[in-house]
Length: 165
Ligand SMILES: [Zn+2]
Image (cartoon, rainbow, N blue to C red):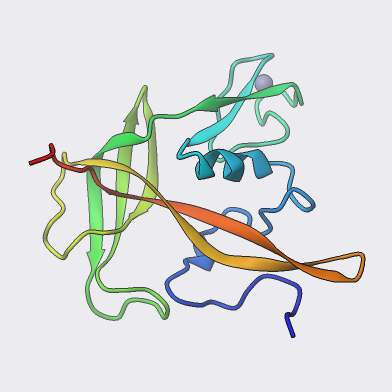
């Protein structure tokens, strides 16, 4: 029988890195972020009052406290500035190598992401990486006594595809 709540770590889901495991809109005022991810869009909120664009998305502007926000697209490609590659002793649930990179998305926007679909020794500083969206175990939600599955997605980055051969 399904149990409501956040699923137990299964497969390679980085649960500790998820922004908001309760993605469904019943629980989460930024669920639009995940809806957009499903469309392969990498988005965040922009304050209509002061123009601040934080990441991750917010429901209140951290600069001016305005709640008048809109969704904007961020680049889905960036360049690797620095990276770490864990080969041995990776945390439970992760594949080796476990790679994290500081990525420059342009416009002065830098952030750290996990890099997937990448072999040991493959990544180099300056490499281009692209957004990768993948399914993670759904969350079981009880709605009026009925268990339903709320589908979930998460993201990482991966080496950008080379030109088609
Ligand atoms: Zn603001």
